[in-house]
Image 1 (cartoon, helix red, strand yellow):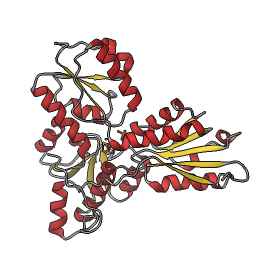
Image 2: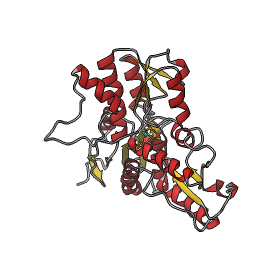
Image 3: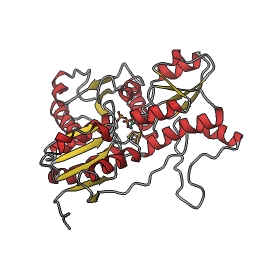
Length: 339
Ligand code: 10G
Ligand code: SF4
């Protein structure tokens, strides 16, 4: 049923936190609870301003590199993963590490290690400079080269065109990645695929939901931070799928009233690192401007849940601190080894 003023919001589902982000953020919270402040975190635990500010207020200290962490102190590795060189440097400083790398990123690291040991040329589709790409490439720097976009395919040089495999960053645009693969395969017809999708379920699901509502939207607002790859991709996917405009915002207060001129339908979604409270603020802002009719557009249901990093679980158990995961009989946390 249409609202009286013709204005409405289409709200994507799934949106917001994925299982890897949920696990990483809770890992920092629980580390603070059981060990007290400060707990050092290498890089932003996830790429979200609000999350980083909130954890900073609670005693987390975010650093760029392990050499900024005092000898012997405790450090959490971010959800995006780290290279073996970072693990080694933490060992050299006797740091107590909690590895919050998402298990789905660890899976890609393992693929890289395996293909490198079989002496493949590995084409890592992803964005240079992104922490996840640095971590994955660092697993086998002699075998891996990064391919940033379809336009870079012509520059790729390999040793043996019949022994090439592609893998990818987990948070890319599915369509753009498939175009990169298509062009790579034109050059290397026997190009091998990764054993399973590297672009993770959460990235894919959020893009599918946006594609569904984008053709009906005059404007799509994506809640997420500038450095959040998966959030930025959602704005691009929205426009490619037919939205007239799309903007990325950290907070409702960043919405420019001019964006709403002549707009009947606003699509709203959020990246995998974005707490729901920020989306609710956006909905409130829109409701105050006549967009009170909110219709959910659901394209998938997610119930994946990861258990906390093993080293932290052991500390929590010793200290008798609850791990914040659902208990027996309710939803079961999937225990995934990240080693
Ligand atoms: O989308 P990116 O990789 O920039 O990260 P994010 O922190 O915004 O979202 C969660 C995704 C990861 C932790 C990368 S696997
Ligand atoms: Fe893991 Fe995917 Fe979330 Fe990255 S976006 S943390 S790979 S679930």
